[in-house]
Length: 148
Image 1 (cartoon, one colour):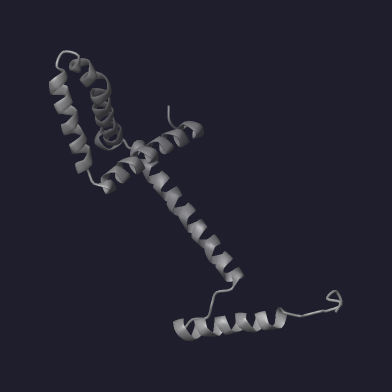
Image 2 (cartoon, rainbow, N blue to C red):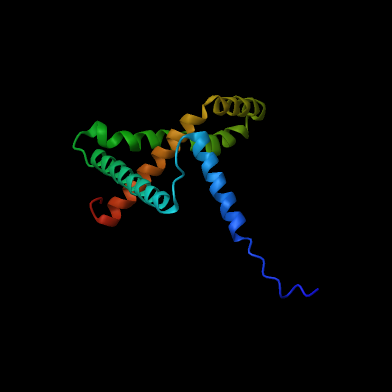
C-alpha cells in the first residue's frame, strides 16, 4: 500500500480538543480564557505602570538629595558611610589587629559571622535596594548635570 497518497486531516480533532479544554476551563473557573492580544495589552500596561513607579521613586530620591534640609540631604550618605566603616573595619583593621591577637580575632570573627546571620533577609534587601537606588539617583543626576 502506498502511504504517500494518503491525506489525513488531523486538524479538526485537535481543534475540537482545544475547544473542549477551553470549555472545561470556563466551567471550572467561571471565567473565559484571555486571548493573546488581551494578555499582551495587559502586559504592556503593567510595564508602563512599573516604569511610572520607578520614575516616581527616582524623583523622590532626587528631591531628597537636593533638599535644603541638611538632615534629609545627608541621611542617606551618612547611612552608607556607617556601612563603609563596618566593611573597612572587618576587612582591613581587624586582620591588622589579628597579627598581635590571633586567638581573640578568631573569636571576634565567629561573633561577627553570628551577628550577620542574625540580620533578617528583608533588611539585607532594604539595604541593597537603598544602596542601588542611591547610586542610580546619583548617576542620573550627574548625567543630567544637576549634581556636581
